[in-house]
Image (cartoon, rainbow, N blue to C red; front, side, top):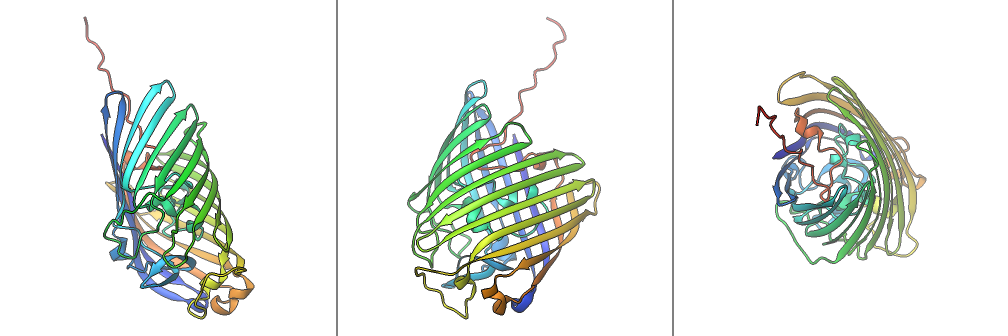
Amino acid sequence: MWMYDGALFLTVNSQGGERSENQVRSQNWLMATAMRRVGTGQLSFNGMLSAEPLTATKAGYAELFQMGEAYQGLENIDRQHPHELFAQLSTVWQVPIRSRVSVTVAGAPVGEPTVGPSAFMHRASAAENPTAPLSHHTTDSTHVAQGVIGAGATVGSWTAEGSAFHGREPNEDRYDIDVGPLDSWAARIWYRPSDSWEAQISYGFLKSPEELEPGDIRRTTGSISWTHDRPNRLYAVTAVLGHNKRTYTDQTAFLLEGTARRNRNSLYVRIELLQVETEHLLFPTVVHKPHPGEFIDPLGAFTAGAVRDLLASGPVALGVGGDITYYGVPERLIPSYGKRPVSFHVFLRVRPRTAHASRMWNMTMMRPMPMPAPVVPSGGGE
């Protein structure tokens, strides 16, 4: 059996304020899962691809106050870097021990360690938003780690997972796989009392993740999600709290996002309150060198958007949408960004219109999609 999911956005992107920029870019990804029974267990092969190295460029798409990774030896400021061409290549084996008890093992040259919530592309609560959260590098940026092994156990509604992985973020050459030593680790506990609710807490040690900033990161996250998914309606909400402890700085980020869809119409919101590393964001005015007593300032961002599906039938859901983002800018960054910058997106969105796609919301590498029970033909006699 196999399932697939994906999304393609063609986005007109207008970032406002003193660092305004206008561009046309495409954010996109495609994921497929192939499954079969092996003995009493289920073997799953997961693949995720993205054309963003071409469609969003190596530097990525413009996004005010976003930062993370490097481009041409410099900090990648006000950009969300593109996904890798190979964003996941994993094998997962899940074996039931008894009723509601199972163990899972997984391995991947490119995969997702056991830290943070489901990555933003897979969250139902972020389904219609074409951009990454500003809190991405405080909560779920490890979802494309180049080298991962993991194991977990589920008992009833509880799951405990652990993994070892290569901690360095991918470099700007997005077409290859730079597998390195398994020098980092993470542990996560899930609580899933029903199909609608899930919550997690996790801790991860990331060995020297940033190319231009020496030092390790100790990341702690907690999240809770509620999802109600039916053929003609979707309601989903996620709240995430993340904390990065670095050599010289501590950063905390809070995210609240939601999506509501009825028939052809969708509304979505995203609220973020986070601490930003001010001296990084002052680049190129300030060339940042890590030091004790760095400036950490609070930033707020509020996004509201809507999407209208244009096609009511067929293999794909084609929608047109847009959103607007307002920012609460810290005092020290007003000269660089302006006091009240406003950003806009207008986009076309394409995604599969299948029952398979809807079943892959809130997916993680360590939680394979379940195969349905075998159908036993009804008997016609002895």
